[in-house]
Length: 86
Image 1: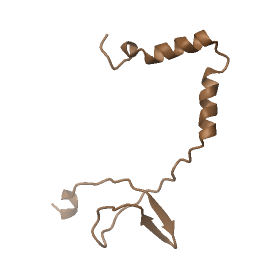
Image 2 (image 1 turned 60 degrees about the horizontal axis):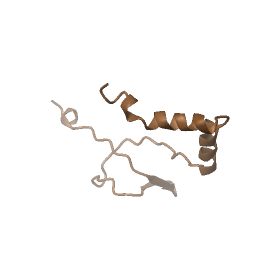
Image 3 (image 1 turned 60 degrees about the vertical axis):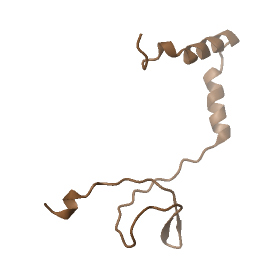
């Protein structure tokens, strides 16, 4: 068997900054010098706190205090969760 076929596949996620034409890791990637890798690039999701709070407010929009209390009671009642045995 070829040596390439025997290697385990490693996947590692780390943040990096693209600067002056070079992708610079923000942490130790744990690689040897000159080791070749395949890079998948994902942009981080920007968190907009106000948008998130607005979305949560809309969940309860139009509900009465008793409706909200009922929804929260159901959400907190773990005995109804599918992860637990009946």
